[in-house]
View (tube, rainbow, N blue to C red):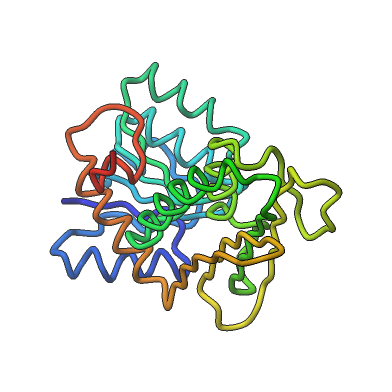
Length: 238
């Protein structure tokens, strides 16, 4: 399989290493938005996009318009996601997005959904806090993964809104605490706390390889498929 990597930083280089280990050919490594001609001459089967929030939309759009399946893990640009979905449907394209490609994290998402559903009858009794810690180079705050965890809790009606790094003003708020520290790949903790007890679930990433591995698995999966997908389809999560 010929893979293109857009966004050739630490993550891109890790993706390259894992893709080669899995016997794929890297036809393109690029750190800017590619041109139509560059995409065509690279003979790509799929693109894995891990760039920056200000360039992700253009990167994904040009891949879809050139009929190249694209797997995207860049966060911080979701205000344009509906436009990309519309373009993908119009072009009969192939697009897969996840805020986190770690297989363990996607299982954690499902645990978070189940827990929030179980806790829903006790929304007035428990405060919910999401604590996320990442490396100093991470640009968006809070993380896209934390926002996915927030959305799942709100979708289950456990809480109604969220606030970032502030004091709660009412019981319907999820408090999100976001920190950037040296030598931290990515930690996410969801805590339910009442006056009588505490429930806590934690996912800790030791390195980037889990994210890179998941993105390559997703790239292998999306070949010959049309539509808009997530890691749920890749992992067969119902």
